[in-house]
Length: 146
Image (tube, rainbow, N blue to C red):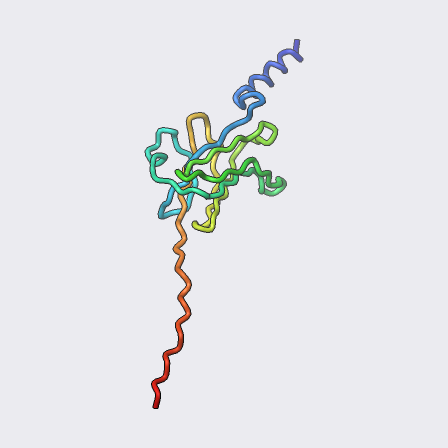
């Protein structure tokens, strides 16, 4: 009887993880004045803002003393800034996740956040890099004949 109770208790604990399907992390990369990653409700108006494409978003866990870093998933934002990644159950650990964002066009962002719940997304704000073109080589002025 105790074994049966223990099995039901384990199943109840694993049920929120979605069985064998894993979890989905979704979100949007938008330009901002501050580089940060925050959890927001799926109804947050900022998710409707113009986004930035071709930004790499990597989610990992660990990296604290005694725990190695485990990459959970990686995605590249679409032209509208949205991204989505599937996280298999075998990679999930409880606790916080580290979100690392980078691209040549933006300054790198890295934040720790709680794992998004059902009905939540990650809002990633990045600061755009100002790229100045290389100055064109100018010819030396010609000397006037004497």
